[in-house]
Each structure stands twice: as C-alpha cells, then as structure tokens.
Length: 243
Image (cartoon, rainbow, N blue to C red; front, side, top):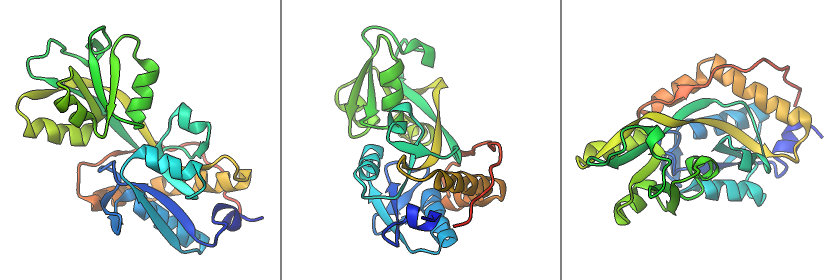
C-alpha cells in the first residue's frame, strides 16, 4: 500500500476542519477558508486526489470525526489525551491561551488563577480545557459552548481562550481585562489516525516541514487577514517517501 491509498482510502482526502478556532479557519461550512483549508487542499494536490472539507464548530467534534473514521486528517492542538488516538505531525503554528477576568478581580497574573474558589470558563473539549483540566490543582473548570459565554452567564471569576478572540472580547467589554502572561502555548498540527503506516506518517511530517520552510504557512496566515499565529520552528528533517 502506498501513501496515497493509505491516507485517502476512499479516493478522496476527507479533512476535518474546526471552524471554532477563528485564527486557523474562517468562513462557513459551505465556503470555509483559512490556513487549515489551504493545507488540506495542498495535501490533496500533492497526493493527486480531490479534497472533501468536513467542517465542525468545535475541536471536540473535529476530533470525534477523526476518531470515528469520518475524516482522514484533522487540524488540532497537540495534546496527550488526543495523541492516544491521533498521530500528530510537528506543529505548523503556535497560538497562545490566555485568561480574562473582571476588571475588579484581585487576580493580577495568570499564576494567580489556580486557587480555591476560582472558577474558569472554557470551551468544552478545547485544547485549553484539556490542559487546564490536567494541570489545575485548586481552581474549578466550568465547561460550555464558549469560555467567555459561560464566564458571562454564570458570572465566573475567569474565562480561558485563544489570545486573538479573547483580545477582541476584552476590547468590546470594558468591564473585563486580560491576564498576562499566557498560561499555555498551543501547538497546532496536522493529525491522522495511529493506524496509518510509518511511511505515511513520515510523508505528513515532511510535508508540514516543507510548508513551514517555503513560506506557505506564513502566506496562508496572511491571507486570513486576522491577527497572525506564529509559524512553529522547524523540526529535524526526514526524508519523504514516494507515494
């Protein structure tokens, strides 16, 4: 079996797109745009197969499609819980997780959040939900459709989210402020199932490294028009197999 038939066994590359992350994907399910869409289409072109974009509103739904075999590749943050099912490439981009608090909050730094009595609103199944659920020892994680929504509706002490939309939220709501520094670095990568062959995984790794090195990722992020993520640094090179 070659890489093409291993990665796209139906003859079409089915790419799971998370529209819930506005830094990396924008638009509608019928007309998605963004760096993840560009990567998926470039991968399909390299393999010589058509691409089907399967869009979701949240990372947990995108992950679920990958796990259930309804997608061949996904675009998610690297996390140990997800890595039990998904084989990730090196990251292609890095974004930041930050906290928002009420303006009058006594919390002055991200390091202050993990204390008894503090409730942190998160988007259920997001990378920062997984991370905070694993690392917070005293604060309580409260899950909802969006971290800022549950934060507002339940009058929580803290909301967690991706820096760019959190900055937009804070700018639109004078009664809240960002906490610095970031509480996590979110590494975004291409993923596929762990059932893929080693040469297929090696091909994907090399593919992502080439897109970082040749400026493809930078240009795709620029075209998106929003605040850019940071292109991830290069990983050690690997030879690309024939497909």
